[in-house]
Amino acid sequence: MKAKEGVLEYLNQILKAELTAVHQYLLHAAMCKNWGYDRLHDYYDHLADEEVEHSSGLIDHVLYLDGTPEVEHIDSVAHGRDVEALFQADLAFEREDVELLRKAIAHCATVGDFTSRHLLEHMIEDSEEHVDWFETQLRTIEQVRIENYLAEQIKK
Image (cartoon, rainbow, N blue to C red):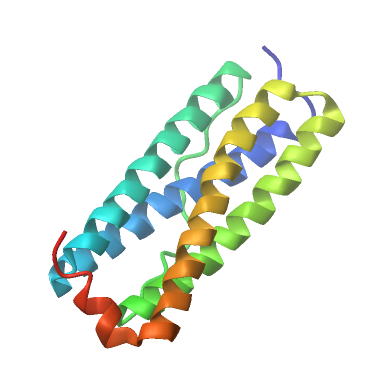
């Protein structure tokens, strides 16, 4: 099937972001494991798996549209010196992802590519859930202080 105008460009931009997210969440999972925060390690590992699924689906869809998946490059991977810095970086990343997905969904609707739109709508649901999770964690840290929050992250 031939892609409609501009759709492949959006799909490849989103693929780049998803591949970046895989690397970022794998790094953050390893950092949390190294720091002894098993619960956070597991959550970041789950996020990385979810981003791999999104990447795989995008690659398949780009190929379906007779395009070439651009997998050669990723953006800079954000990291930090502590859990709160990781959360802030990941929240900013997910908010940017949601904005890109919104633009791509609107474009797909405009050009009449409802298959791509449906794929991206599924992805934006996950990204919005990620935004909510990071916002909730940062709000909880504000309320209970970082020491109390981290004490709960040590064991599963």
